[in-house]
Image (cartoon, rainbow over all chains, first blue to last red; front, side):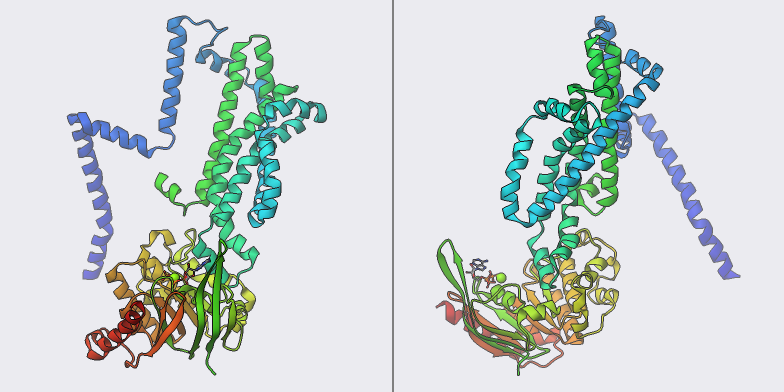
Length: 300
Length: 258
Ligand SMILES: Nc1ncnc2c1ncn2[C@@H]1O[C@H](COP(=O)(O)OP(=O)(O)OP(=O)(O)O)[C@@H](O)[C@H]1O
Ligand SMILES: [Mg+2]
């Protein structure tokens, strides 16, 4: 009997505590609003700091409002700078027109990114293991990197036509170098103690790569991937500018020829959204994979 | 026949055309299941000697045999449990996953291991880390990481443990505590341990044999047997015998300075 009563008390315990906690919360909330001043500001700050989406969303909203006001107050004509409301309206009414073009650009960018970073990763593995290979091949990679893609793009159009292929290749070239450099660094920068420990177990080169070098390189690879994924969109657009029949870059180019400002801005806006989405997809995967990593833990 | 035998070993490094003799004419015989300390001034070649025995680097001259094998053969049979100065834990692995690392690589060598695989969680408990089995290595303090490194070496099935100043990065109090934990865990496992240290106290407390080295060039100046009874306990540190051994080793180290 006594035991069951005790058990009951224990069971209701947490609930009672929860109720108390809610009450406390309520009181402190009321107090905060009564006092206003610093604690109210502090609560807002805390709320913002704890939300991942709100701060940038508010910033964008602020930017759009400022832009809208500027256009209206200064009476800027749509031919110079259209109001964001009119751009959004254009996007909303002709969404079905933009969507296939967005798909084309997204396809070129993503395939280019995958191709460029994959080749760079393999190159990184090889160069990290052989100084000779690094000394022979890295200068070529550097040469490809310092040559402006804008200058190569027309050449690729001549070689590979107006389809997706030249754009994919340009995206691949532009993403190749950052991934190559970061992967070499990631594979090489293993802790000397850890490397020696693996050697003391007589681990093979392959085991050392899989268990030590690869995990060690992941923060470097993801950091490069974040850069590369936005570069890949740039690569696709540059390719489309050099010669294309579709894609958001093509729309920007055509709209610019005909001074269709709403259309141009609508395409630019879609490109920006695409870039943000891609970077955030990489971030999302990164957070999953690198839960152990300090810089991730700090962001929390 | 001794278990580990070092005969006329020399090691020379050539750096920018300049030759340094890190080790000169090293001769050493170690019995199985004994605890041996290497002590000597900085740069006298302790780490180099340890690395040669462990097959991590080659000697320039001389012969090393480990249970009748070359160091490289012994290494490929996973005969060594290595504990470097920094704990060598992988930060992306949990403590338990780090404990398992020795069993994930060079798997064909498993058959050559002498002891049965021990429960890693029990080992972690024995060094006071029972609550940190699933913590990431990064979430542990330096002393806790070293304890994982030591527990891992004892749990790896390797009969020979090579420890290169495992406590040197730790504070005095932690060191003292860890030296007793090391003593405990060693007394239950009785593996062969070669332990590099700068601490006279640790050398005498832990060892059956203290190898005193001197530098420039690095050589062995004396090997002192420590005939203190085992199991050794904290009270022993206050005995006259203990102090006698400390001053013996200290005297030997001093002689080489002057
Ligand atoms: N890879 C190397 N290249 C050149 N010289 C080296 C190398 N490793 C060690 N030495 C030299 O060999 C000598 C012995 O070095 P070692 O690291 O074995 O000393 P140690 O006794 O472990 O010193 P400490 O107590 O400071 O760790 C030193 O003079 C050092 O400069
Ligand atoms: Mg050393």
